[in-house]
Image 1 (cartoon, helix red, strand yellow):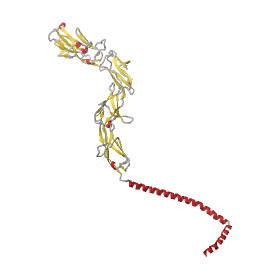
Image 2 (cartoon, rainbow, N blue to C red; image 1 turned 90 degrees about the horizontal axis):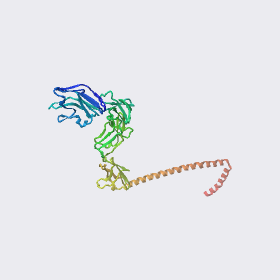
Image 3 (tube, one colour; image 1 turned 180 degrees about the horizontal axis):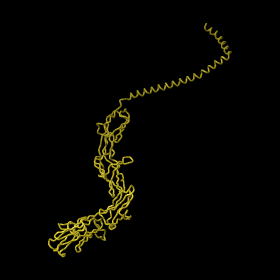
Image 4 (cartoon, rainbow, N blue to C red; image 1 turned 135 degrees about the vertical axis):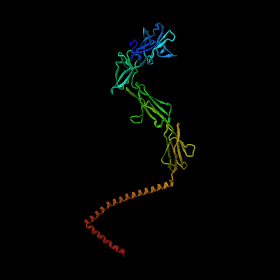
Length: 458
C-alpha cells in the first residue's frame, strides 16, 4: 500500500493470492480493495514466467476489467478511465494506480500477458475486486434537543483519514462526528481532506412540500384522482396527509407520499395538506382545494304559505338541489311541455282554479339534470261565502262582548252615584228631629189640606 499525491490509498484486505499455470504465476497482494470515492487506489502483484520465456518475448502486459469479442480491453484505451490510470512493471512486480475514484470503477481487475509466440498468453484470474463507496452522513438522535451527525464510509479507511465538516458551504470543524440542534434548517456535509471534490451528500430537513394533482383537469365524481406530496430532503422524508374538517386539528388520512381516490365523491371536496418529516425537521405544505364536480341531486320543493289556496291569493314555490357547479332551475306543470317559469323561486299571484294542478322543478348543470317529485297545488274547499259567514259570526260576537262591557261599566257608575245621595237624605232627617217647630208647621199644613180634600171627595 502506498499513497499518491492525488489522494488517499486504502485497502480493505491484504491477502496474497497466487495464480499459476505452466510456469506462469501471478501473486496479487489483495483479493478485495475498498476505497472512498475521490481517493486513489494502488493494486500490486508479483509475476513469474516460464524459464522458456525470455523477458524480451513478453510484448505486452496490461490491466483490464472488460472483454470485447473474447479479448481483454486495455484500461488505458477505455474512455471511462481516461487520464486516471497508470501502471507498469519493474523486474517481477507490476502495479495499477487509479486516481479520482468513481463508484463506476467498482469491478474485478486482472493482469494479462501477451508474448510474441503464437498462442502464448496468460491472465491472472481471478483478479482483485475493487469496491468504491462515497461518504455518507449518518443521522442519529442524541436527545430531544440534539442530533449527532457522523461522516461514514463502508470502507475501513486509513488511520490518516481526516474528515472535514461544512455547514451551508462554510467550514465548521474537523472530526468524524458533529452535534447539531434538532429542527435545524441548515445543510451539513463532510469530506476527506484528501478529496475535496468528492464530499458526502448534504443532509438537511425537508423544504416546504409541494402537492401535485393528477389528472389536473376538472375532477368529476366517480373518477380517479391522485394527490402526490414531494419535498426536497436528505435523508428522504416520510409523508402524512391531512384534511381540514373545520376543527382545530386537521384529520389524518394517510402516511404515504400519494393520496389516491379510486372513485372520488362529492364528500371528498375540501382542503388537503401534507407534511414532510425526517430526523432533521418537519414542514407542512400549503392547503390545496379539491373541488369535485357532480350533477344535481333530486331537488326538494317548499311551498309558502300553503299548497291549498283561496281564489285571489298568492303562493311561492322554492326549488333547491345539491349540485356543483350550482344548478339552474326550470318550473313545469304536469302534462305541459312549455316551462311555466325559470329560476329557483316561482310565484303564482291572483290564484284561480286554472292554476290548480301538479308542479315540479328541474335542476340542471353541465354535469346532468334531475327532477323533483310532483307537488299538488289546489283551491281550498272553504269558499268565500263560508269565509264571510265566519267573519260575520266573529264580528257579532265581538260587538256583543263590547256591549256587555259597556253595560257593566254603566252599572258600576250608577251604584257609585247612589252611594253618594243616601248620606245627604239622612242628614236632613236628623235636622228635622232637632227642630220640633218644623214638625208643628207640618201638621198645620196638613189640617188645611184635609178639608179641601174632603170637598173634593164630596
